[in-house]
Length: 390
Image 1 (tube, helix red, strand yellow):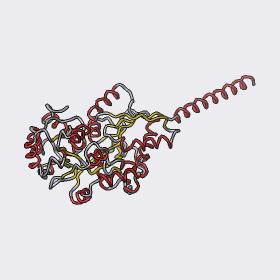
Image 2 (tube, rainbow, N blue to C red):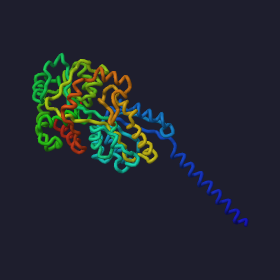
Image 3 (spheres, rainbow, N blue to C red):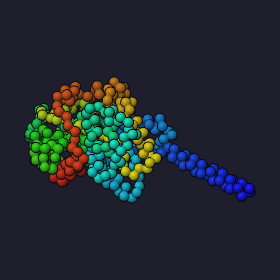
Image 4 (cartoon, one colour):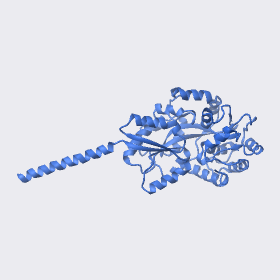
């Protein structure tokens, strides 16, 4: 009997210990996590308030969120090195099509769809028609969070340019007549730069706008001629707009958001104008949320919830911002009237009435797929910008 009693006591103690261990494990699993977000698209201007709203709403899930900005071309190498070392320093990346494409090509991102469709119920049905096409660019490796019809457009100082170019030939003639007065940024790290690059094959009538290596003979020939009258290629769009606003340059390439926002911020004078090519095709743009491979499970569950939260109308309405990625929202039924009053004022003051007609009249296409985009960037870097990129 004494033996049985002793055994019962030991079993009871063991049960208590096991229960305590499970309780400790559950508590640890439920501890709020620290989230590190890296932005390589200037996207936090549109989404940081939404991310912070998630932390405020779910303090039991998120202890802190750290925000970092980085250049898109440098991120894939950094993540690759991090993954090779078995580290997980970055939990979520917000990116344009540039680093999205590079990361898909190099196998850096977690596959979200259809693998984890259950935690993103009905997500594809939330997108408006244009953004829904842009979501396909992610190939299931990311979720689109913001959308812009983009361009390409030319932006110019009307005091210096009385007859803005309406065709690539006219742009080339103007550039040759005004050397060093036209500038654009390296496409691999510039939304306007890559939109210009991808839009030219449509305007010039190249044989295959989807194949930058074998189908862009006219585009590469044009860019090489244009290169002769361009002083250098900045590493990002902000430097371009600064030079345009200061009067160092008289013209650049732009997109809807990069037209509106720098004028709203006073970087570029409000009276500067835009011009579209006569036969332009809109090359649309978007920003995406992607998760690097190797993020631990306890963080993944929180990140999935965060991504869903960012696609709710309240957070999407914040992305109108100050016109930086005009219009901004990717999901359906988020009108300008739902945006904060400041955003509404900016768009009404610095938006352009002609955009509505251009957006309705001209065709829209999605950007190059990941592999083709990387190939286009590499060819531009090698053959156009190699000696002039800063």
